[in-house]
Amino acid sequence: MPTFDPARSFRKLAYNNALANHRLLQACAALKPGEFEAPRTSFFPSIKETLNHIITVDWFYVDGLEGGTLGFQAFEIDEPFDDVLSLTQAQAKVDQRLTALCEALTPEKLTSTVSLHRGARIQQERMDDVLAHLFQHQTHHRGQVHAMLAGTSVAPPQLDEFIVADDGRFRGSELADLGWSEETLMH
Image: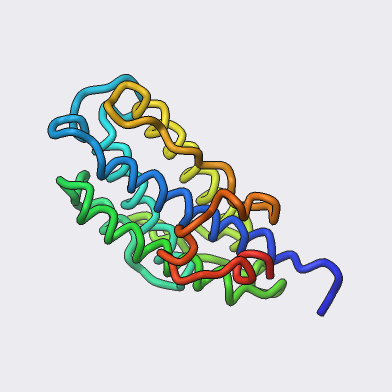
C-alpha cells in the first residue's frame, strides 16, 4: 500500500458526510410541530426545503458517480419528503451508497470520467472533481440548516468533529448507529 492514498480523503469525507447528516437529522427529528416547515431566512426558506434540496442533489450526483442515468429525474419533485423521519431514512440510504462508492475508490477511479445527465446534454467531469463538488454542496447546505436550527427549540448540533482520530471521543454511539467502528474511519 502506498504511503499516500489519494482515495483516503474522499472516504473520510463520505464518513463525515454520513455522520454529520445523521447528527443533523437527529436534531431535526426533535423539532416541535411546525418548526420543520416554518419560514426562515436562508437560501431555501425552510429547514424542510433545504433538507429536501440536499437529498435530491445527492440522488443526482451519487447516481451519476455510480454510472447511472437518473439525471434530472432526481428533481421531478422539489420536496419529496414532508416529514423528518422519511427524509432521514432516505438520506441514510443515499449516504450509504456514497460511502460504499468512496470505499471502493482507487487512484484510477478518481481520475475516471463521470457522465452527468443534464437533460439535453451530458456533462463529463473527473470523478474526483464531482466528489469534491458534492461534498462542498452538502457542507454548504447543512450549514444553512444548522444556522436555521438556532431559531428553533432545538440547539444546533456540533457537525465538524468527524475527520481526525482525536475526535473519536465525541462520536459516541453514532458510529454504532451507522454500523461502523473507529477503525472504519481511520483506514
